[in-house]
Length: 134
Image (cartoon, rainbow, N blue to C red; front, side, top):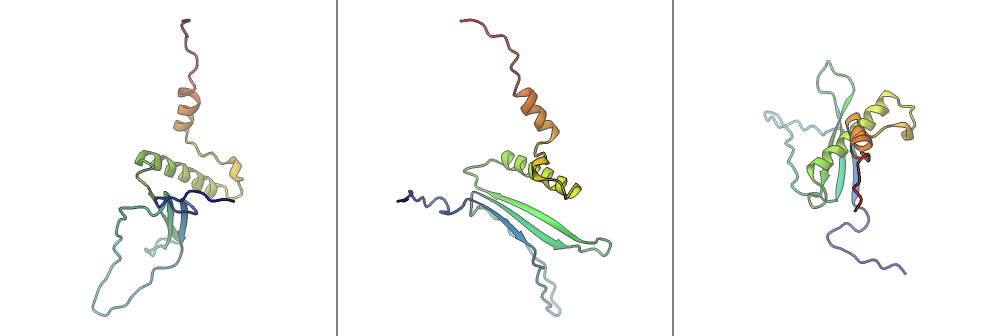
């Protein structure tokens, strides 16, 4: 019988969430009143890691199509800013590769940039050192 310990500090079913908002913004016509949306920054994360994507219509007449905006919300107890920024850069690499070649298999898409690949394969793998006998 499964009876795992429960923690009130974590969501019991999942810790990572992906949200895709593709519903157009509602417009309200208030005669004589001008109103704009104001985005309130969140100072807490409901989950350990959340990816929120928001598809918006082009606002200029010169632009066609939609724009995708993304936000990553994360627990400061688990992640630091540099880690989340690196994760975002890897996600951008994958998304750009998918746009460049929609027929590409996911297994062929590289998630590392050239600088990161060099650091992992060359700098961190520097094993040519003299070892002094003890």
